[in-house]
Image (cartoon, rainbow, N blue to C red; front, side, top):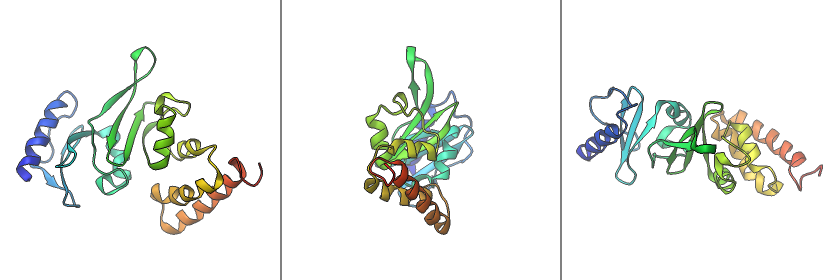
Length: 193
């Protein structure tokens, strides 16, 4: 498996030769979960699993991916190389990588942010970055993506958002209560509507 991973990582890096830079890891490194391998380069990292193949994650997206526990987090392993996002007149407006459990989008104005789960479903239904919500910008994007959801449907999500953002358990619980209270007041079907 190490030889397969090494060959695939080398091939993926060759596809990205114009931006990935020199290799930092001399050989492919096994991921802690035992399912994948990676190699770090100056401009990003290449991940490989037998299921997903080898895919590049550029440095600009890697920081966000790392913040969400890389392959051990909700996103899992990458399933695409970086893809360019295009706006009017086919102009490049940003970039994205798809992962087993979601996506990370980047734009110069918003930076790199992951989106997954029900929020990704709703955002995708609204044409992702081309829709009314635009590029994700963090917690505000999560809240915007669920606007208009009935309060009862929002509850499971509000309990998870702070934890998904990496806050410690005690703070996450407190934040969940604040978000839930705000959603009851501001979401159609909530207390004050």
